[in-house]
Image 1 (tube, rainbow, N blue to C red):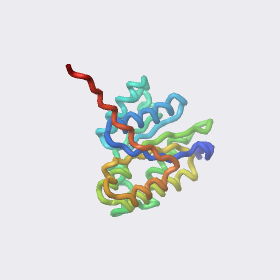
Image 2: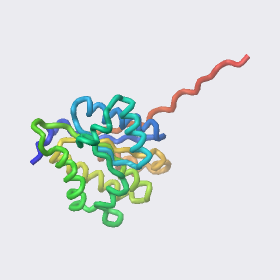
Image 3: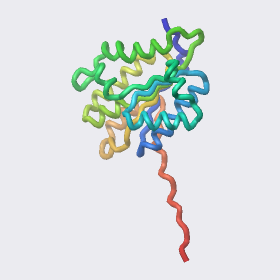
Image 4: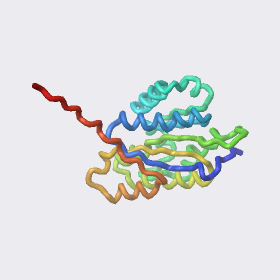
Length: 195
């Protein structure tokens, strides 16, 4: 049986992002710190984001190939992973436990010391973009239930484009997270005087 990390180590943060580069920078920093601390990481993302996150990890001098080989980094496709446990527009709790719960348990198994798994996921963002917002909220709840058994740090990514005119959904998402990270500000425009 896996040894869970102390409960105080759990957090479930949400990163609202305006552009892919700022999201991938945040995710690489989040996962990179875990690798520096000797903790494993999980990435469940679209192919575009996966490739960029891995490139940014390499830029932080993380040996991504070795981490993948030894199982300290697990990289999964967001849509294919969703397909493992979705039942129509809603995630099925038993199927979620049999896929994501088993994944977390497997990563923790065989460890002598408690560790903190760091996971990044954007399955909820995909659900929201597909018009399945209630399914996204339910998935957040299932992650929170899983966190009651296993210590892990979870970072979710949501595009701000999902919430252009919707405040209730935005508030519902925020309520399911322990930390809310606002989108990074756009870099200031440099101006120069032209004579």
